Length: 226
Image (cartoon, rainbow, N blue to C red; front, side):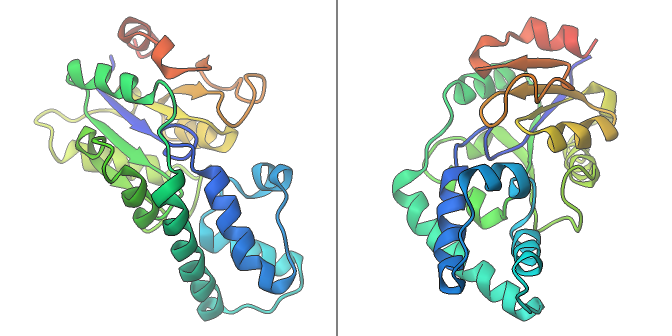
């Protein structure tokens, strides 16, 4: 039974990854470091900003402490906000998919490795914030995907508004990355993948894969979660 849906954000609802990469590289330029597009999607996409800077520091023999990394995160957040004001966009099919779930009274949440401030910037003015009863971000968890903690927390928050508890097996996760799918599976939830960041073959662990969320019907989702 389909009773809830939890969405990754970057690559599922909004195509913000190019902006994140540009913001990272603007910060890293002062150290003579640049992340390639291929390297970003291969090695850094599933990491929080903190984990990304920490990993880059180790890879480049830079002795950053926690205070240094937090400073870099603040720089990156400022640059990202500037880019988001002009470049943000909602992925084709996402708004229609969200509307379909809302029309069928399916409570929804976001579980993302992005910072809450980044998500709020993107959602501002789109009309989409009202779709989500809970938002879990990198600010809320200590471990990133494929750890399932974020999805478990998102469902816990959704259940705060439910008279009858929603089980993990009654929850659909919409993801665009292999480690996001792994996290959802480890949380005991059903999985739908969208091929915005990775190929269908790379997302083959999902129970269903689509190129555009608008192509998926509520009947298909209910069958998937049956």
